[in-house]
Every structure is written in C-alpha cells, then in structure tokens.
Image (cartoon, rainbow, N blue to C red; front, side, top):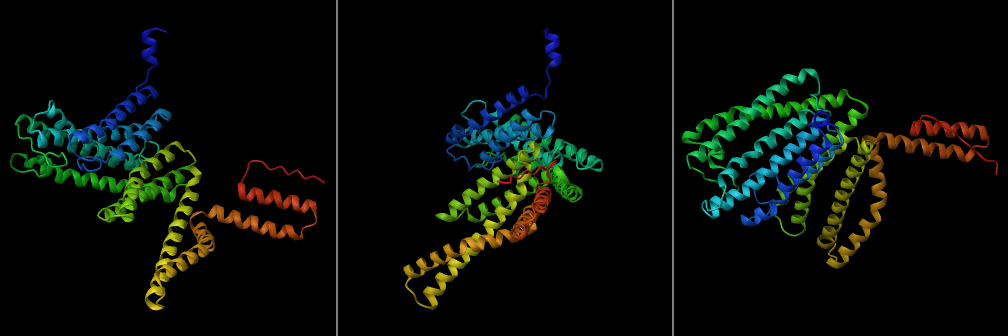
Amino acid sequence: MTSKGAARRFRLASPATALVVGGVALALVIADPPLAHLAHQSLNSSGGSSPFWFSAALGAVGFVVASRKPRNPLGWILLASAVFGALSEDASFYVVADYRLRHGGLPFGWVAVLAQPGWAPSVAMAGLGVLLFPDGRPPSPRWRWVLWLYLAAAALWIGGTLVASAVAIAGHHIRVDSSGNLLVLTHPAGSAAWWGVIEAVFLPVLAVCWLGSVVGQVLSYRRSSGERRLQLKWLLTGSVIAGVGIALAIWLSAKHGLPGVAGDVAGVAAQLGLPVCLGVAILKYRLFEINRIVSRTLAYAIVTALLVGVYAGIVLLATHVVTVKEPVAVAGSTLAVAALFNPLRRRVQRAVDRRFNRARYDTDRLVAAFAVRLKDAVDQDAIQSDLASVVQQALEPAHVTVWMSDR
C-alpha cells in the first residue's frame, strides 16, 4: 500500500485517534496525584476545575464511545471535556505550588497559568454533550439556532479567559487564589473589568442555552418511543443521580463518622453516575435494564427510609415512653426491622413496579393468572394454546413453538 493510499484510508475520527487522545487524558489524570502532593493539597481539595474522579470517569466513557462509534461526535466531546478538565486540574495544582508556595520559583509557571482556564472549554463541552445527546444532533432541526448561539457564546467566553490570562502573564500580574484560579478571572477589576462584562453577558447565555437543551430533551422524551426513549431515560437517571449525590455530599460534608462516609460515597456516585449513564445510553449496552434499575433503586431507597424510621421510632418509644433499658430496646428494634424487611420490600417493590416498571408488573400478573388457570386445566390443547399466548404477551418473541411430551 502506498503512502497516499494509507493517508487516504486514515480518518481523523478513528479508533487510533481515540487511543491517542485517551492516552493524553490518562496521562493528565495520572499526573494529578504528584502535582497535588507538590501543592500540598488533596486530590479533592482544588476547586479550580472539575473533580479528579469526574475527569477520569468522563475520559473512560468518552474513549469507549469514540473507539466503538467514532462517527458519533458525543464520544469526542466527552473525551475533549475530560482532557480539558484534567489539564485544568493539573495546572491548578502547579499554579498553587509555583505562585503561592514558591513565589514563581518553578519553571514554566506561565504555561500552567495559560492552561488553568481549561475548565471553561470543559464546561462548554459538557453542555454541548447534553444538547447533542444521543446521536450528535440537536433534539430537532428547530434547535439548530440554539446550537449556533451556544457555540458562539462559548467561543467568546473561552476566548475571554485566554486573553485575560495572557494579559496577566504579559504584565507580570499573576495572582492566584488557594484553588489556583487567577484573581483577574474570579474578581475582575481595573484593567480586567472588561472580562467581568463578558462573563456577565455570555455566561448567562450559556446557562440559558444549557437549560433550553435540557428542556428540549425532556420534550423529546415525551414524544419519543423505543430505543430513543430508553436512551433519554438513562440520561435523566444519570442527571438525577448527579443532582441528588451533589446535594447529599454538600449536606454531609461537614459531618463526621458514618454520615461523613455517606457524604463521600454520595459525592463519588454523583461524579460517576452521569458519565456511566451517558455511556450506556450512547452505546445501547443493556439499554432495557433502565426500568429494572430505576424500580429497584427506588424500592430499596423507600424500604431503607421506612425501616430506619421504624427502628428509630421503636427505640425512642421504648426508652422514653415505656422506659425499657436501651440494650433491650435496640435488640427489639433490630428484630422488628428484620421481620418487616421482606414483607415490606415485596409490597414496596410491587407498588414501584406498577409505576416505573410496568412491563415487569404486567408480566408478573400474566404469569400469576396463568398459574391459577393451570391448576384446573385438563385439556392439553387448551394448555398449549394458553401457554403460547402468555409467552407471546410477556416476552413478545418473533416466533413461539411449544413442545409437550406425553411422558
């Protein structure tokens, strides 16, 4: 094969390119721990960019999607968002180590200052991913003007961060906060007041376009069906996980002991939930499991909350009203909760399935009704016909064959 033929066959959007970009993202993520040590900070302490774990999860999902479906822009968007987020986090640690701890004594500090606003394209890419979910196109042709408005506002916003950083480097006015952010970007004043105007104008435009894209996806969900509806359900599930996880992490962040550990777990779930759900939806891997996951999650969350309430109520009633000794009250509460678990779980699961997993609920009802009819059935042909009908309604196979033996 000639070199021209090889060049002709090479495509920019290819698994090889995904491997290269994924390797860059992996290298940037691996660089986070030593740079955090250099800045005397923990991996989760820097607020200069997206969290370390979120960039890693987003990069992994983006690499898998880009390598499996290179023609889908979302894989490349997620991968680019991870690269910019990890680069910004690395730069934040290096800027803190250089300009706050060593007063400019490290080499190439200006490069880190220029790279630190990588959070801006990372945020813009994340919003673009929501707007173009799940196939790289807007929810409808009418949303193209929203896409172009979003891209224009994002370009001006990102360009403003780069210009402000370059001006600070050229004027040797580099001052950073404890997170590694340039003060001219977080508190623009004086000669940098123009950046405040740009941020005040274009950041709300980005937020409105992002909110509009979410509304567009919700409207698209209402009129969609089949795989598209399931993909949007995965997106909504990941968004709910992220929102609830962030809220719990913030609420429990200042607590110690078990609540503090629960807050850390909620924070990790918030960072991993949305990227994983996006990857499942785009790749259509086990797409139909979403109804089961949602119903089981809701059921166990409700059961857990009810059992915790029952446990606390019995302990308080026994110790403050009946004046039972605390060890006896705790033991009795534990036994009561253990006895209630299975009956309560079955009832709650049935109620949740009726609303969120209707296919499973209807299938269980069909099978239960067939089992009742089977007790009194004596006609073999009627049983065979009824069995085929139940299988057809419950599983919807392309073809059904029933073989029965006289033995």
